[in-house]
Image 1 (cartoon, helix red, strand yellow):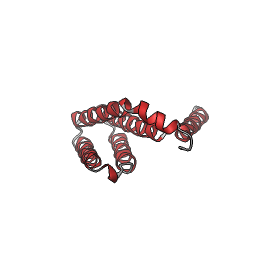
Image 2 (tube, helix red, strand yellow):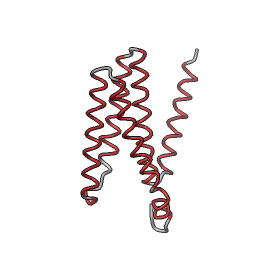
Image 3 (cartoon, helix red, strand yellow):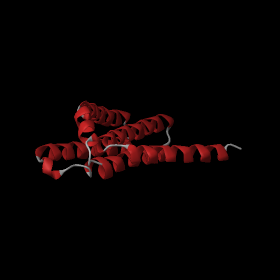
Image 4 (cartoon, one colour):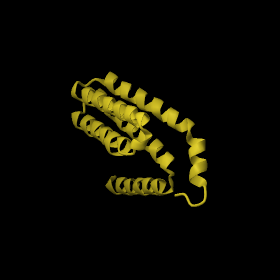
Length: 140
């Protein structure tokens, strides 16, 4: 009875995400990766509370993929020490996510959220300069 609604809602969300990605500046894309990883970790914490092992594993796996394939992959090695420190921090967050998943430890997952949230806040503070550079003619 509800399957058609769910498939339409899912399709709408997918189009919305694709449109957001097409219109996003590189700076906004990183914010979206931070947001997506935090949302996935929150789903994992909720799954721990429900005792849903499969959902916990899926959510943690998604968060780790976002961190590895999105955030770590976006690091520019030309940034030197900053990039290396971020890479190390992303590795640490990944280890906390794995530990939290393996041990049903919501505190480890909360720690990962706290770290990502701090990074997102710092990233957001540099947004005005990034938006100005992105809006210049010939950029995009």
